[in-house]
Length: 119
Image (cartoon, rainbow, N blue to C red; front, side, top):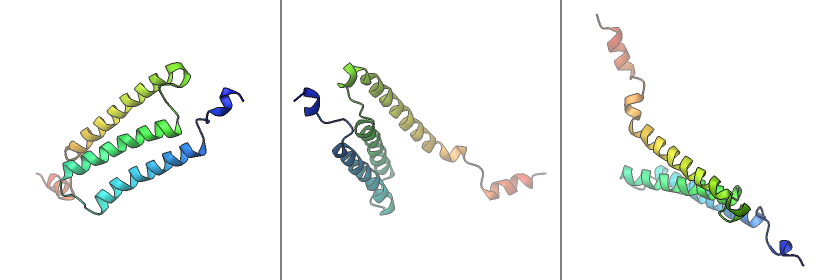
């Protein structure tokens, strides 16, 4: 029996099922956290949501894209590093947008009417 047949393929059903179940849990928990109004501490809720979102990205990379440090003689490590850099950029950008959302939103109807009524 060859060495190749003893190892499981990277895209086996077990890997996909584990990835799917983890993705469902990592989606349902933040949804439940917001919809059930579990905590009144907004900073804690946002921290939990962002951490679980980051973990979900890593779950997708590992279980669905099969990016590991050992595969292809370490060449996929560059893909993993690039993924982590993109993850930091997306999370930092999302936090920045949310913190500055009020400043960047369109004015309310009352503010528009005040501007129109100026002499």
